[in-house]
Length: 413
Image (cartoon, rainbow, N blue to C red; front, side, top):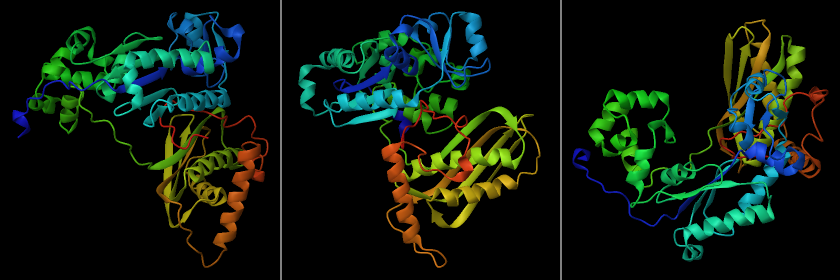
């Protein structure tokens, strides 16, 4: 049946707005410290030569400094590059302030990441102002109420995909719309890899069926797209490019995890145990704040010579206490057959279920454990993370620094 589909571009009003905070971490550092403004700066996981750059300021980007480069590579491009370590509390504060400001315009505000928001204005009174007027107002309010050095790029469109594409048209500080009247002209100006979700591999797939431009992509029918993608993605892209919504799905949380790249490789269990403990505390806290419990724990190790070990364990009973998670994780850590220097360690909890009911145990007091965990979390929430910590975490201040990624932020704490 889909072979006969002929679908025109969606002529619905562009009531979807995508907001992207430009050079997020770097701009927030410049906002907090006026002496860093108008200078090339980078926020890196570590300020050592091999530290990975997480964010580059607008000034640094103009000199070729990009996310993913090593600090030493950034300084080859820009000898005056100023490198700062991440300060997660600042980024959380700005994210929270932005979300509060945006929620005043529509109740349908979705945080796509630490620096991206999607707003749906369909059926709201704010829509009467006009989307461009709202966009300009949001830009001004951000400067007045959150930070005068912060800029956002705003995109408007009939669906999420085109709104995000529009937000990338004139960075930084852009305000653009893709609609039924201008999409052909804009598509002619874009390359395939300018589209969010089209990477190098997808570009090769499209090229193999004769699709070389975004206009070719739009004009392709579903059978041709199916030859490229060999999956339901063919239909999804057919809809996206025509402005129809296909991405408004909130996927369920499948796991909670945390990983850490060690500044120097460690070998012994005695050295790795405190780091594992801190990782577990962070994972357990995030999981409990999101009201989940788990029946599975997974540990992964990457060694200095790039050998890899990972193992998971499914449990008979759901756990939520970080102590239980640690006992299982340490058991798995001991089962590694390699006695090699570890350069990266990761812990995750899977097989999640809502923590709405408490299963009573035969050999321990579940209610007492639950009350203890609630009390510890309450103290840490009020006075700061890790005010109350296990003894195994002693002397880990310089390990497992607080990090915020650009991806999924559910459970951000």
